[in-house]
Image 1 (tube, helix red, strand yellow):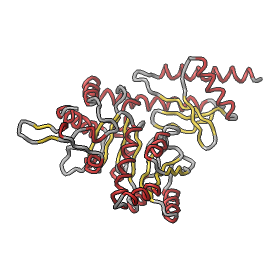
Image 2: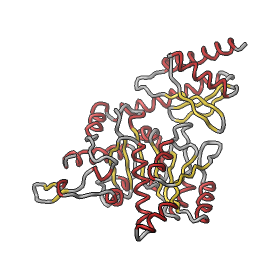
Image 3: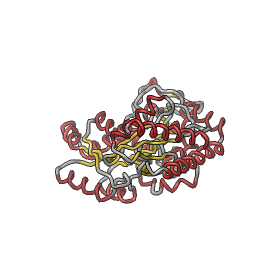
Amino acid sequence: MSPSGVEFELQMVDLYGKLLGFPDIFLTNSPNSTGCGVTLSATSEGVIMAMLTARELMFEKHATNRTERFDVHSRLVAYMSDQAHSCHERATKLANVECRILETDENGSLRGTTFEEAIERDLEDGKIPFFYSLSFGSTGVIAFDNLKEISGTCEKHDIWIHADLAYTSSVLICPEYRYIIEDIEKVTSISCNLYKWIGLNTCVSLFFTRRGKEYKSIFSLNPDYLHYTNQEGNTYKYDHMDTSVTLSRPCRGIKLWFHIRLNGLEKLQKIVRSHCNLAKFVGELISEDERFELLKVTLSVSIFRYHSNDKFNEYLHQSLIDSGEMYLTKTLFKGKTYLRFLIGAPDENQKDVAQAWKIIVNHIDKIEEDQG
């Protein structure tokens, strides 16, 4: 990417960082900030880059030669909850490090005691805890790990905390929802997918870290043919190739700029608030029918199941998919199958939601009739 494209993108990422309410320590151009914000192709790439950066920092900390590096590598452990997206576990395979998946509480939240006990066990076994994937609105049941309880242990053992805000980041454009990122300054890096909710085209994911210097330098290569000289005669070497898996990449800042220029902040806020209100309406519809169990309504997602065995809920899900009338995703939580009613279309309204719920009820009625 050309120097002008790099500068433009940095400005746009900082702008969106401010719109989402992130502290200045994560922004590139804020005074006295050590942060760095870039665009990546997806949240999964952000997880990989964060994990590889954390891994390299452990090599620098514990290894002085190649032999020691191999030894350190064999002892590295990354942690995540059983609600974390599969891309986090996949990243451990790519980084070739051990993955520790920890059990969550009844709300799907990873608690400090569970995390600390796992760390202590691994330390006793000679392992090196180095990375923690923080679920901040997990895909399955929109669960939030308890950052306040866990951050102290991570700080004590120099563990990189990567916050997965792939889904929840969009809601942060509304100030009243920023309570969900309380203590966010304690994490090391953040991934956001704005195309999951507020209409930004793929593939644009935002990645922020407060350890920008290390993030940019660890994978930096400076061949002469990539040096640029500006009009003042200063050599310009920083390029986004140092911050992503790929060397060649588009200027995604253009998408960010057009998105905010086309819609404006107020319109995007209106969409988010409408979706959250519609999800509450879905929750009311579910609660009115005693045949259903409402697990939770969080932001724009309502999670529920039919009061029966998992086989019935699996059948209901497949029946809806096969009909072509609507599409629902399902998830497994604490041994039970749940359906996820997600509000996502920009112009979705209460009439659309009521019609969708009627389709679900009609399928239930037919299944009950067929089964006698």
